[in-house]
Image (cartoon, rainbow, N blue to C red; front, side):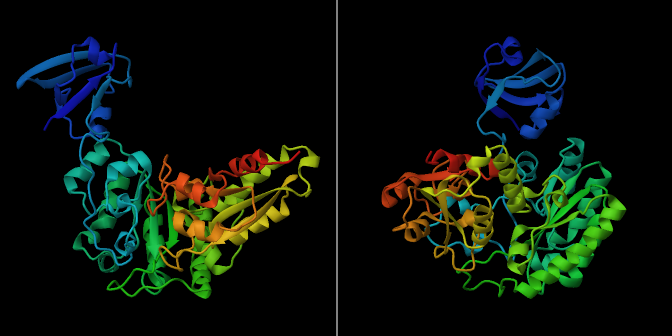
Length: 436
């Protein structure tokens, strides 16, 4: 195994040691380099002996540097290897129910624990061997983000439709015993892994010192499920039952572990018609990327930023007309937020966008597409349309239906402004259009 070095940073430790672009890295300090995680761990010392291939010949280079300083090598891919793909066939897999015309990248089924470490992606560990599990421990790859779904091995195998799913609790015990910490999630399906099964999942995970939290997320279903497992959304009473189970455990574990541990996603509270918990109950928002506490944090940050405005800037005065386009589930929350906290010089209309692309059961803002956005916002009287940046590809300008942000602006004939998910960023966006 070797890795092509595409460039060497000028004046770096590697450059001073004579390493060249085109060389292939084989070992660092005598150990084979599997991927970028190995490269980072093995290159942390002050003296790093690199074994390389140059024109087919083995050579060595001794790099001297500060501890944890970069060697200065760059490779063909950021991971120095291919992404590991999913081997599961989950009943609730979102990729399996994507409509035609969706952005191609959404169809990729990755399940790579290294991306979990580096980017917070959730992984199932079904494609992780015992040897690889030991490498996770040896490299101190912590914290990880792990999709549990169910602690019971029979149930987890049925949900994920692979016998490899049965090994999870043994894997988690080994990781926890090796000092690895991890956040967990369970995608819940009515009548399958809630109720008594959820109680057992919470109990089993709460016994592991390495388990930091468990996010509960309701199954997401599109309108493109022909031939797939017969699943349905949660009814309000069923969502309330999940929250009741979570609430009992949150109280118990706060007393026993000093953490509420179980964190239902915002979608559960919205589906149940229940009040979203207070800011302090999210304990630092460790699961926010799984949709846990996003609305509460948005409100908290908006309030804090708005409190710094002069008193006369916190009054209802009319002014510039703005529209906020969002998914149907978040619209009532945003209306209540902005109706109760006016900003002088702007009038805000919250517009819920029905999701025809994925289907009417999809109500989250992050899955609103350009086509549905255009259909909803044409004819709305406003100077600009604000959207969450979650509707767009990370750092890009394309919606999930592969249409561009500029194309939407042209169709609507007005600014369409992506806004960060922080509350202070929302306030700043409103203030940009304030009439003084």
